[in-house]
Image (cartoon, rainbow, N blue to C red; front, side, top):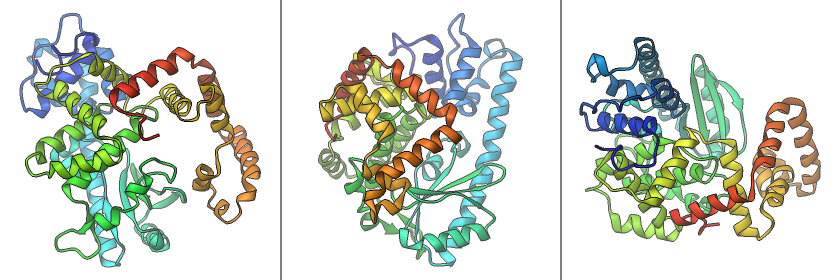
Length: 402
């Protein structure tokens, strides 16, 4: 049974969640749930990973006596209906944006979920909290003017991306770069526009080659995996893309590029986990550990995972006592990091200490609860936590790029 018999140490709710998702991807009726399955726990887990809507597709194919209690089935159905409405709204809004950009000569490139969702059995199965579009920094003001004309409000401007919002749930992240400047992949992805080609019949809408898009998906997954963690959705993305284009991709090019950015080993493990969950692959100790970490992370990671992961990376890189290194990074970020939030530091780097003070005041006044939670989370991290995370990242093929 896909996603079930091969994951032996994973709790039954987690196993059955993966199995339900696998059955949907294969358009197959799922096997009956294990006896004494905690349905409420499975529901909360599926919501935490943003997969309750997709799980509903699998549950509705079960016999009536094998389905969750009626009230809980209703909750799954509500998530399914919300996802359909959200996908339709996002589709209409993004097509409107792309059409307007095309008409007004603004270069852009849709990213990630907006393209991946069409490889799922149904596009509404692939939820998106926001829609990501790459644009050229020199066109920032043109983008702003047009987005405001389209009825969006500017929620944030500066750094890696600008955030635009329109009710009821349209979040658009307009990216001027794909990763932060201090990312180990920044130099590699700085050539994204050089690698892109115009979409057929368009003069301003660009796209990456299938190979470069696959590499970008892996880099994006890695960024979150080594941050607070990333959930099941990112691995479904990789699996469906690989299944859809595996015969068309130039794998020699992909392997060479991944080797150049020290991601080949990790990428192979990611593909293998997809086969364990959704295909016919066999699990092992490493994949069990990674699966546990992924499921505990939820869709967008956790604060504790973020702290432990960053601490283990900095300890490996700086050879400093790990927790102290993270404390320093948390309260006194380096110039390169703060330039993202305070672009004027590029011209006036001597103002860095003033920015530390300003940042601290803003955190206490406007993000007090979040700041105190972060302090508590850092304090709770033990040396054993860091050692386990560092060991897992190394076995998975990470840390080489740091």
